[in-house]
Amino acid sequence: MATIALIVAMVLSLAQLSAGSRRLMELYVPPESDRLTYHQGGVLSGDISVSILWYGKFTPAQRSIVSDFVVSLNSAPNGAATPSVGQWWGTIEQLYLSKAAAANGQAGATHVLLAEQVTDEQCSLGTSLTLAQIDQLAASVGAKKGGIALVFTDEDVAVEGFCSSRCGRHGSSTGGDSTHIWVGNSVKQCPGQCAWPFAQPQYGPQGAPLVAPNGNVGMDGMVMVLATMVAGTVSNPYGDGYYQGPKGASLEACTACPGVYGSGAYPGYAGNLLVDPSTGASYNANGANGRKYLLPALYDPATASCNTLV
Image 1 (tube, rainbow, N blue to C red):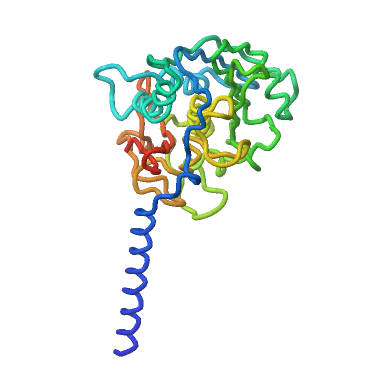
Image 2 (tube, rainbow, N blue to C red):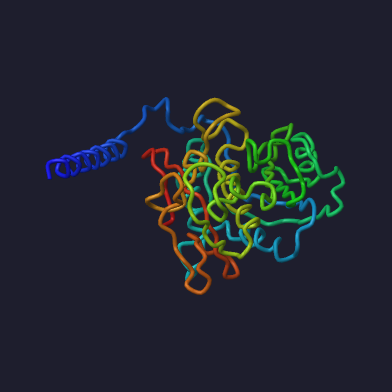
């Protein structure tokens, strides 16, 4: 009995220590030097024209998953299902864009406009691309000033650093008047790395994958990465906007909250999400044409916390 009592006491002590540690972490606010802050540079504002290059083979159904997400990136209309992609975008405007615009004497809402979409099914530059070639492809799209060129590579295209160090990337043109984003379809190459939690994680705590809301692990994973890149692009388009840490290796609006999609998230657990009763799919945002998506949390610079839709 004494042994059992000792074990119970030890378990209770460990539980109290763990709970105390969590409370301390919740109360901890990092110093200003270690927080994501505004560096007085540019952000994207006004009408943001978005052009898309589909590099490789994508079916019309696959393309519509992404294009519906892009057109959802505006304020949600009255009566729209909530939580929504529009609300997520509104949080970016509130936390980042409007404050930077006010600091620079600018005003007015930001609108995302889907422009042209072009395809390169024959993979004109081959199926193994360098980052310089990604930039070349982005330039070929011809994004308008203040706009974004999106380059999507299919599941059979290898890109420098893909899976090993990145799932996507954003940058700006040489003249600094337009931006671009690249995202790859990871379904064959590294779904556990770039499409989690819709695939078994490649590293860390293991858990059963969630059901993708649009029934396509690769494309739903691309939307999650695209959302991360969009948030980073509009709030830090030229490397002097909102970021934390050294340039070139900085944390941005979403990357400062890795793996967080809902409240209560922790490593290996995406958080408390909504579940579609008809499909069992997990999501946290409603979009255009009845779409559902899983979008990453946004870092709140004022509170040093991760802001989630659910």
